[in-house]
Amino acid sequence: MDDRIQDKIKEIKHSFRLMMDGSVAQSMRDKGIGYHLNWGATIPRLHAKAEEIGCDYDLAIALWKENVRECKILATMIMPADEILPEVVDIWMEQTTEQEIAEQAAYNLYQYLPYAPAKAYMWIASEKELYQLCGFHVLSRLFMNGQEPNERGINEFIDQSLVALQCGSPIVKKAAMNAVIRFANLGLVYERIAKSAIKSVSLDFL
Image (cartoon, rainbow, N blue to C red; front, side, top):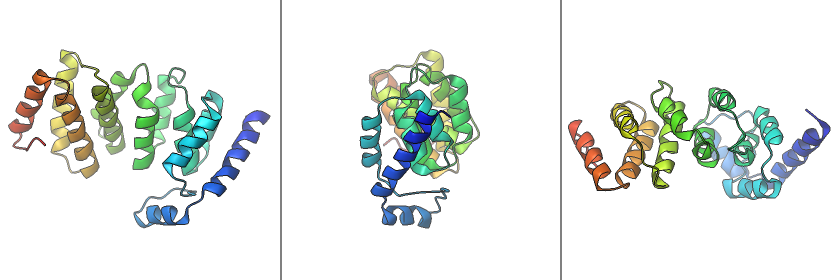
């Protein structure tokens, strides 16, 4: 790590102390969210810090390596989506252990990847809860932005959504249902496909 990065990380960590919110950090601990270090900084304040920094690949890589909640979230905010390689995304996913980090990565970074659909379809087929969560969040965003899947994508999405909606994970179920709703909002044909699929497993379409 070069001196510029080291100095910047020191400055960033110092700024977290100024953002510290003990009640937020305590609430997370009470919910069993076990970060090594958590200053309780709010997402809007981290977004403001990210805007101040701007996109910075090397800094994002260095921040992600820090075992600190705010560092990891900030890394997802400043990483240029068109520069991060698929292999690095795979490493970040492997190292993601908290729901909040998975969701922030999906919203701040993964939905903007040039290869976002490929990763998302791979993740929703995973047996790992946080991978599925990330995948469905990314697809929700893509659908919200009007990206229509091809026939293979439709079949894959519906199949994996039905599996997720019948699984034991509440967070995956919720993410899958949100994705199905966004899928249905793409148009009448998509809505009919979604309603038919949900009905086939005796669930209610919201």
